[in-house]
Image (tube, rainbow, N blue to C red; front, side, top):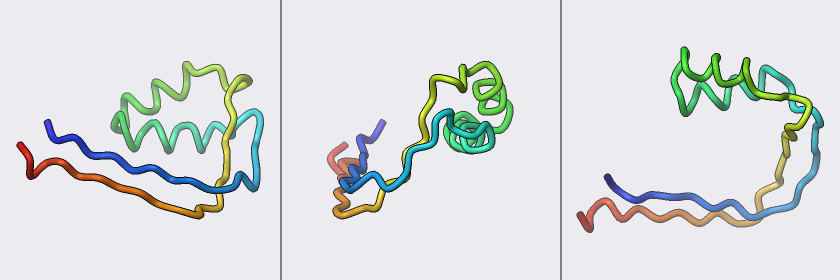
Length: 68
């Protein structure tokens, strides 16, 4: 499996507590697919979640897939 990553450095310009269910679900669906993402978001304790909005100052990415 290729190793790839992205790092975003910046300033937090907003923080929502609890994070909106719609945002948690959209993020979960992106990584877990529609069924798994919805299930994950529904069982998640939203009261303890925070949605940070970041103004990006610097992006770093790396892709090592050609090394394998």
